[in-house]
Image (tube, rainbow, N blue to C red; front, side, top):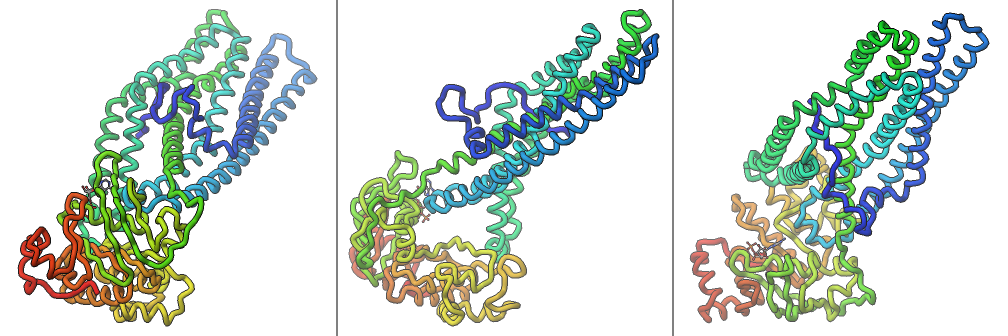
Length: 600
Ligand SMILES: Nc1ncnc2c1ncn2[C@@H]1O[C@H](COP(=O)(O)OP(=O)(O)OP(=O)(O)O)[C@@H](O)[C@H]1O
């Protein structure tokens, strides 16, 4: 089935003329514009030259059927002209295709490099918020859409728009009435197509958005399946993906149904067979009536279908053009997303004391998720964040590894504002272990080595032992060399312990830890608690506590409510105070019900 294409009309994805900024497509193509322009020129020459042999054949037919037979001398130049023009068409067409492909290849490389560099400098918060689907779509699908546009569609459109101009000009010189007839299918096709495509700009925007949703859901599906499966809920993993594809199928079939009749009619009236039939029938009448000669009808039969061809070719290509424009908008948006500003005058921390002063943060610029938080994390201490769901614990913790920058106030490490510490220096000092563990498609050893690629095998193994994952690794088919994500999928608990080994090896003195929620398997939970104790030793730790039993011995427990610190102190003091913490403690049941442990 043909896919609906859009007709002329304003496209919301493309800035209106006069808004100053160049349209994203033109701006992205700027580095290769010269070569693309040359390819377009060559393609136009090829298209024009491609018409010449048909004109030459028509002239030959005319001379051969003349009452006075033509001299051979007058025929040969036409044959040579036809051959020469055919050769020019071949050479120029091939050169145009090669040039466009080389230019596009360079453009793809440049864009992918720019995107990779830029994404690497985006705040981590932006990547976790929007999902990796956005990046995958830009780097892979959108750059691919630009390839289709620049290396194929552009030249196709130039060819089918140029050739008919010369063909029609010649046909007018032969018989203007039949030439007019040759234009009728084209005009009819345009009318029908416009009707089919009314409102296509909005549909196209929805088309792109629906594809984006599938792309994001596919990445989520692919990355989340291991964890879902480790909980025996493999079917859950693809629910969102299935919903996204069903939504797309519904939207698309509705669109196709609404435009099917007129778009099919548009394609039909410009089909070469239909045009040929029309010209032959009317031409026969012209010849029998003596209004034209049989020889004069020949060029119409040869070139007539080419006059209407743009409709058949450009119509479907409009969809590719719009897809390319939408892809350019998405790529530009990603490239324009603000990066974490690198400090003008970099500062290095002196020690590892963390201090938050008057910290506020808002995701949307209106509602404060954190409001005037003051907090100190002394080196070598464990601070636990507790509070109701949505109180801002994860947000507060995410400020330390600079997933986001504060909206107001300051966060300092060793006296230096986080915004003044170069990113590499910051990540050397502040590590994080999140619940949502991301493992790379690489060997177990390389996964552990992520923060310190030069670590020796002995160091990797020492950290794996401390994280209680060594025994599981040695049971894998190739031990530490086992590739993850292909033959072997780790369970959620195992993946968590692997990420703890990773953090141990990276050895950042400050660590943010999103404590794992309860695992179904008590053995796995016990192993994780042991691994965390190893990780906490000697570090400054900020732990988001979901179960209070695990943080009883924390140096300081901080209670967050509605983005404000409402209580802080040791476990016993907070219980004695009988405030919010005591209420939370009671709400989680008797401590004896829960396995006792500590974050230390
Ligand atoms: N990326 C985001 N964009 C917009 N709002 C967000 C984002 N992340 C969190 N929020 C909002 O910020 C508030 C605090 O969320 P946060 O995740 O920090 O709370 P929490 O205490 O960690 O909750 P939980 O214990 O359920 O994980 C909530 O109202 C949440 O909806």
